[in-house]
Image (tube, rainbow, N blue to C red):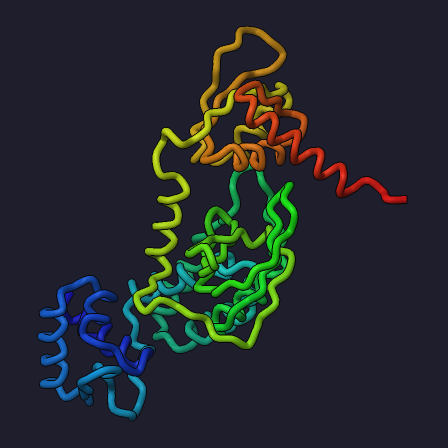
Amino acid sequence: MRAERLVAIALLLQAHRKLTAPDLARRLDVSERTIRRDLEALLLSGLPLYSERGRGGGWALLDGPAINLSALTAQEAQALFLVTGPELLAGLGLEQGVTSAVRKLLAALPANTREQADRTRQAIHIDPTRWGRPAQPAPATLVPLRDAVIAGVQVDLAYAPPGVDATVQRVHPYGLVSKNGIWYLVAGADTGLRTFRVSWTIDAAATTKPVERPDDFDLVRAWEDVNRRRVPCSSNRVEVEFQVRPEDLGRVTLALSEDTQLRPIDSGTGTARRFTATFSSVHEAACELIYLGDGVQVLEPASVRAELVRIGHRLIAAHTPKW
């Protein structure tokens, strides 16, 4: 394990040019004391390392030949090809680049390792869509948002959730997250850290102003924090009772996410089956259920029925001819 960690330190320094010992400890999930011992071992082995003290300092590699990355083990190669599947990056506009990169990596591997990596690539497929829902086309704003995140510039974002009038606000895009095949933008806004569902954005105009990012910002940790705030405890969630036409049973039960905790209610021999499901808010319940059309009728609570009616009225108003 230490040998792998030493290689990882060298590769991180090559990729990031300069990192502090605390940075390396956080990335490799070990103590700072362990990292300092590893750095000393790398120095003794002859790796051209040097350190800079003071603000902006850290550890770095002397300029020189890049570390050869072609000597991957079979296990490393298999892991690498599993996380470079084009389906995981769908919509980001990188599919051709991923395919080309995989082809070059395969060519650089030894014959035996190449064969195992190629078998791994062909034997495993990851489908990011949920059961009962076909793959949706990527939102038109996904690529511009990707470019803004990478460039580190602020964005004027036009955002319009279903049934809500569009609003425009300037945000600081920190990163993009894909969950269940749905892309979200994690960004700083006037109200603090926010997430925006990319499919609900109707425009994303990049500015020339740089993003103001907290020094200790971590995308994974921020996403987990946002999720905890969205569903702080079960008492704040909304339980909805609804009935489903028999011919729509399969479609409805497959379409609702596992997070809804879908539960059947024994309703005898009626023409429709009754269920309860739990959602994080009244609005989310209405947005999830309106997608299922008239095959679903909400019975309780009245607040969800009212939200469905409100969204319906807005949709009618938006699509009624003005002439």
